[in-house]
Every structure is written in structure tokens, then in C-alpha cells.
Image 1 (spheres, rainbow, N blue to C red):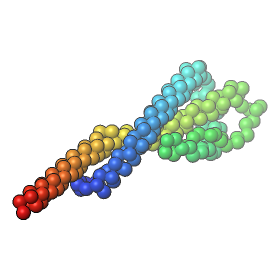
Image 2: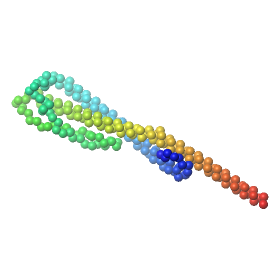
Image 3: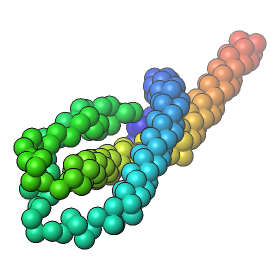
Image 4: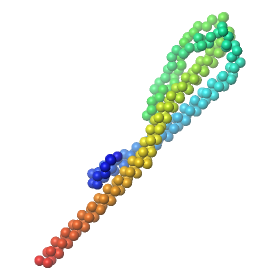
Amino acid sequence: MADKILMNKNFLAALKIELKEYKTALPVFEMKEQQLKGVVQEIENDIVRLQQSIEETNTKTKEWVGVMAEKTIDLSEIVKVDSVITEKQEIAGATIDAFVDLKFEEIEIDLFETPLWVDTAIEVIKDQKTDLLMIAIKRKNIELLREELAEARRMKNALKEVFIPETIDNIRKIQIYLGDVERLAIGCAKLVKKKKQDKGASV
């Protein structure tokens, strides 16, 4: 939007083009805002479900705590993350990381020397680590999406509350001015014509 208003037809035409562009852009940002709000809410719900899953598993495995504390078994050495696999995903102009898989190091376990509960404990720990990693990724994604959401909301509000109404007002001012100039010009032309007619009649 121009800082200075020029009271002429060219500037009026330019303002009308700007207004059309603003009105085209407004629903785009409104739709983007709604889409991002929905995605953020969905991810927040996912995080809550993952947290509940972790808590439920912790509750169910409390009976193992004493056994898993045995000095003969170090589960932290058995369950180690090897790699995290993610892929880029674009949502309403924002690029986030989508979780694909979590790979663990392959550790050989002596089945004859290892207690029977270890296999189950390893799977539980892998599930918990996976859930915790997914939560971390989703929280990072929410931060990015909230920034994009705030920007979309700012643009929507700027268009709706500033650019569009100000442009409409400027168009109105120029149209009034040009109308006044045109009426003045017509009035002057009529006056000149009348004076000529009066002068011709007096000769």
C-alpha cells in the first residue's frame, strides 16, 4: 500500500488493483490459519495420547522395578538408539519433520545367562524410547507451526483491519476529489460558454 495518496486516475486504478489483490489474499490466509490451527490441535492430542501411553506402561511395569535394578543386568547397555529416521513434510507453507522409524543397535543376548523377563523389558523400553522421541519431534513441530500460525494470523488481521479498509477509504477519497474536480471543470466550461454567448449577444 502506497504511503502517499496521489489524487489522479492512474493512482486510483493502481489502488483498485491493490484492493483486488488484498481481497484475493485474505481468504488464503484465513484458510491457512484454520488449517494450521487444526494441525496444531491434532499434534497436541497426539502428544497427550503418547504421554498417557508412557504413564500407563510405567504403571504396569512398576512391579519390575526391583528386578530391573539388579546389578547383573544393565538395560541401558542393551537398549541403545542407533539412528532416527524422519522425513520432511510441508503443511500450509511450514516444513516439519515427520517421524518414520527409530532404529536400535543390535545387541546379542545370551539366552541361557539372561533372565526371562529381559526380552519383555527390552521391548517395553524400546517402545518408551520411541514414544519419548516422537513427543520431542512433535513438540518441535508445534513450535514451528505456531510461528507459521502467528504469521498467518498477523497477515489476515493486517489485510482485514488495515490494508483493505484503508485502501477502500483512499479510493473513496480520490473518487470524491476527482468527482469534485470534474464538476468544477464542467461548471467552469459552462461559465466560459455563457460569457462567450453573452459577449456575442452584446456585439
